[in-house]
Length: 474
Image 1: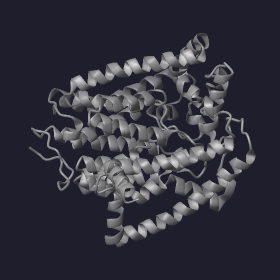
Image 2: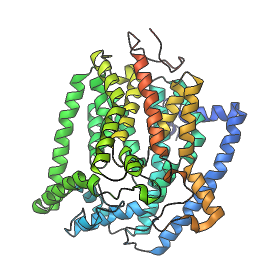
Image 3: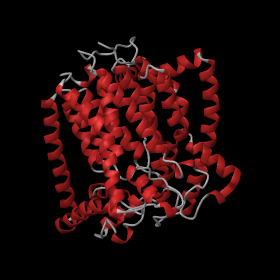
Image 4: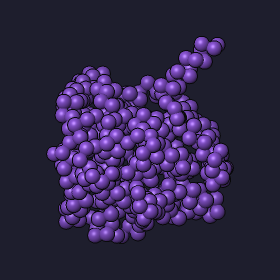
């Protein structure tokens, strides 16, 4: 038993080197009365929220097999399984009559194929397993970023990760995913592993994680650009070539398993679906009465000016204008590269990663969430050196993070009347104000400014465990 304990301790130490995120939590709990009080209040809410989630899940378990793709509970999981069922029956995955709906299957055929072994399992059990998987992935997401900050020597970032733990526990994006059983939390964890593998230039693991992301959410492959900007072209091109080859191999294998004719037809339908998504999405115009949950630049422009080709062109121009600072600062760093792996210039590498993440969300036409925003928030609190900048980070992020609390409190006080027939919550401020895009733009601006400030440093400096996490003027 003693040897087994030693082996387990060794595994734990390798996975989460000391000090681990839990070490920080224990230390802050012992030393900070404010942290203890905030955590106690948050833990009470966590217990009540989990009880509510359990009651909802119990209803799903008692309902038996669920075939509808339109119910509120576990909606996304139903969509995934319905697509897997259609694949098994050799039916179209991308239904033409569903293109004007928000809730449709929108991932590669390989994702639907991967889910077909789950079809014989009762839906209620799958919903329970998916709930536990999402909770486990969220816990691991928190712990893994603590691991990354520790391995990179970013003690200040680990401290902020601990201070923001109460925000993690109430974060609306997590609770939304738990209700709809989407894959945002899971893909955010895979993206985290990709960022770590790219920063450490581990080619094999980078290839594994990026290959998984390309089957579901291709925009999360943004870490691939980091080595190129840092002046590591050999690693970048190796990974790029292998990624293209792996994607082709996965596509070919999927087509072969589905049947060549059917598989090829579904991949063509997938490409048409992606190309036509913007044209067929049910955009909300001024006549709609409120913005809704899609907070993309295009949707905001359509809501202000109406759905028209001119408004679409204006939205594209706005996106290009917004992304210009990132392009300029990335080009400057590319022309004056660090010429080292990301782990040797952690502040530069992580600032680039998070700025690219925000830039990808700005470019997208459908933006529901910023799940990794909770990580970016903690990182920015460690990075920013001025009080006004930190206040801006809190002011824009906290209302977004607390949306679930507001929705639940509204439902408890006002009842089901706050939910519209198309499942909007009338008391939810995010259907009137683009809170998500507000967070994206402010975080993007702060990160881009930091990247520009780092250009004043003649030589990228590795931040040690005792140094403050901010640019040092040269």
